[in-house]
Amino acid sequence: SVLINNENIDIFIPASEPELRWFASHQHERKVLSCHCIMASSKAMNIGFDKLLTVHHLIKNGMPSPWASIACYSKSGAPELPCILKSRSGSGSSSVYLINDHEKSLLFQKLFPDYIWQQYLPPSRGEFTCGVYRCIDGTTRVIVMKRRLASALTSYAEVVNDPVIESLCVQIAESLELVGSINIQLRDVKDVGPMVFAINPRFSSTVGMRHKVGFSDLIWSIEEQFFGNTLSPCPKSWPHVKLARRYEEFIEYN
Image (cartoon, rainbow, N blue to C red; front, side):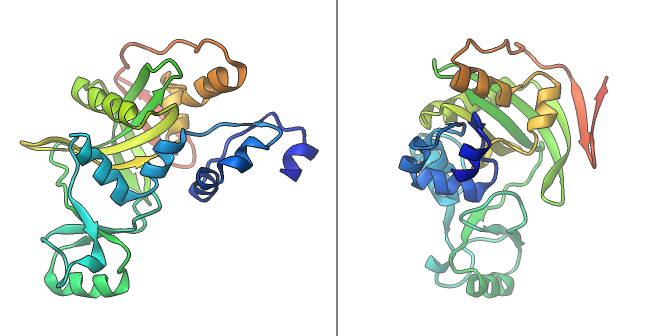
């Protein structure tokens, strides 16, 4: 707050998960800042930052989700194989392990008792990252990108128009009473359909890539939450665009 006051900051946008977690549990501190703080609404943060709560919330609201349970609660390793062992908190894939044999599951259960087991979802139709912005008036804007990961980040993405996934993202945003921007990650499983495995309640690392094609959730947040203005328009459908990220971002139009 001292830095904000000294530099006459108008808008503060927490970007890292530790910052956002702190603000989610210290709402009163946010209110006394001398600048406007832009982040997702509290319910979205409290549920999204807890991977087990995320699964429980999705199942409770009748939305597709893999099963999940706390690692130390099972008596003899993983409930089923293969499965995923992942941190209950945190984002990205740096703390995610594929468990495919019983001895490995026993070892990892001892090493990470507070992690969670989660159903393994084969990416038969691909893995998707979805930018979701829900406005103050309750309307929701969604962009769906089929992605590939490198070093726990989206290195390649292809923008797709998928009404089923878009509708699911709208349902999730409404169930979270979202105001602001989140990122929903899912896999489209053969004979099952889209299965959500994570909700990241923050501006995604793909925010720049998305902005290039018109999904300007950071700009919309400032327009709506700081200036109180009507949001700039959002495309009704997305161009078939491929994006790659290395040290800088590239766009290829087909």
